[in-house]
Image (cartoon, rainbow, N blue to C red; front, side, top):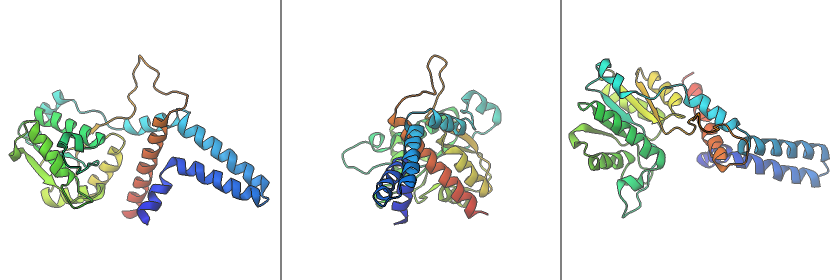
Length: 254
């Protein structure tokens, strides 16, 4: 029930349709002024999340907090060996497909960033994280299989298959590995602020390695655009998820 309620509240289109339904009910109930306010709210909300550049601006503001890791600079930091922790981001256990196809797009991009960094630090360990809600193969195991396909030695991969959310990933890593080994944290750029919050809460100080950017300003193209776009709605959904996740994290550790 809680999961359904969270999915409902964090879906930006539900806010629009809820306002429309309430407006219809109030209209037939004779509350004409309240109906006008709700319809105005619905129109402004839909415009903001689907046509204005607001979602792109807010996503970019959050994604730019941490810079992409330059592998040329890693050698100067004396991090080899290090742990490169790739956080979970969803997968499927559909039979007959390779690990590459079974990972979600964010999970695949996180793996590729971890692989890029592991190539730059050949003595490092790739720590694969992510659980399975079905009890079958975990995402950590799927990432490890893909790493093997990419030529990473099984001895250079470590699994963290039971962690079911960002807090659990931070807590599990801290309990298992402690603070002695340098840690590079790989996750989506939008998710990185919340991930860093939890890892620091558990006494770790990882080097952030963001990837899977949703907004990448290109001088040759207009990045922040006006006009209808379902991609903007999806950005809003992910933003609401991160805002809610950060609020919950700060409430929990208060």
